[in-house]
Image (cartoon, rainbow, N blue to C red; front, side):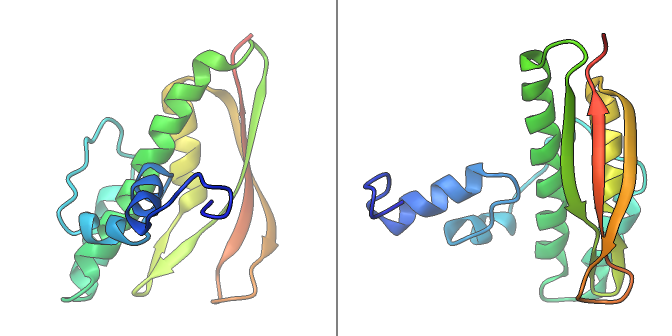
Length: 149
């Protein structure tokens, strides 16, 4: 981005990252500490998961809980903005992996599927693709949905 002159300062990179889905590089990381969610949509199960992450680590629990929450709030905003651009019958496909923070599973595939349904996508499906090579229990999923015909 610097080489092509889209960015000239680290601050610009941080601002761009903050606007990206789940962006937390540079200045964005410090913003997470005070970030307040809009709560337009909160998937079932997320409040309990966030509470567990928040309470699991005195120093960084709140920051990581905010990171997870912001990621899914960004995803919801992305889906809501994209939906009007899709033709009827169009399908959307995402590859997403679940995660573990401080021993607590974040079921990204379930939260994504709920967000897809909440914006109006139908025939939402979750298909496990493969085991990840990191921690035990982590998988990648193909999550898809269709715009109503």
